[in-house]
Amino acid sequence: MESKINLTEEVPNKGRTFGSLLSYYPVMIVDSDGHETPALFTRSQIKEAKERAARNPEDIPEGQTFFEWLFGG
Image (cartoon, rainbow, N blue to C red; front, side):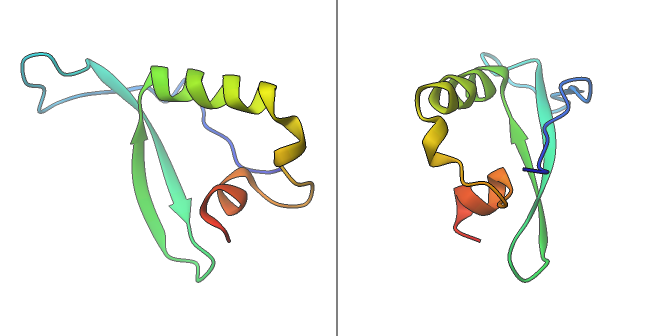
């Protein structure tokens, strides 16, 4: 697996409104055609994904990136 979310790349929520989070973790999602789409994950979304992966390690195929597996690429 080559996909990574770097937790040192935390970015502030510049357009923050009342009740919204202070920061996000940015990633670039590349689809099977090579198109890139930016995405922002919260710390709780990353925690939830890590817990899911720990419960289901058999569901992440070898030789496929996490995002290829996640988005069917």
